Structures are given as structure tokens and as C-alpha cells.
Length: 103
Image (cartoon, rainbow, N blue to C red):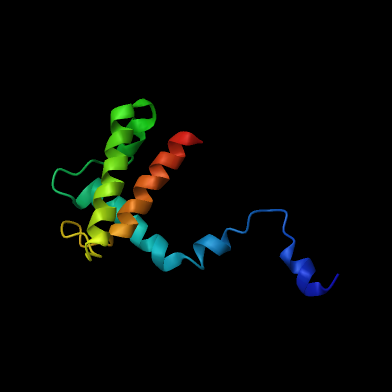
């Protein structure tokens, strides 16, 4: 096996793939989290999303938010007018929360 192929076999997770390669996108996601926790009028507070683990209504709200942001994108709007952040970053946050509850 060549050295290049040997380098592609990793036993541990390579966090640099996410933290370095996706840094600009992750920054937008973090900005959405920060906005919701601290900057939004009637901010939710840090880690407030964790309340949804056993709350089916909150999970429905997350799915509705995903649909609302997706509809905005489908209508040509890339930036959420309230937060001034990308709709896709909002969608990713909602999916992250739902994934967190699942695992």
C-alpha cells in the first residue's frame, strides 16, 4: 500500500476536517446559536434548546422552523431578516438539535 493510501486510513476521528475545513460555515452556525441565546429580542438564553429532549411540541417547533427557513430560501431569500444570518445556518442549528435528541 502506498504512503498516500496509508495516510487515508484513520482510526480516530479527524476533528480538523470539521473544525478547520468547515470553519466559515461553523462560524455562521455559532452566530445563530449566539443570536438566539443572547441577542434576539426575548432571547432564549444559553442551552435553552436542551429543554426539548422530552418535549414533542418543541421538536415540532424545530421542524416548523426548518420548513419556514427552507421556504424562505425557496423564495429567493438567503438571509434571515431578523437575525441577519443565513437561513441555512438556522436550518443546520435546528437539525443539530434534533440529532442531539435522537442520539
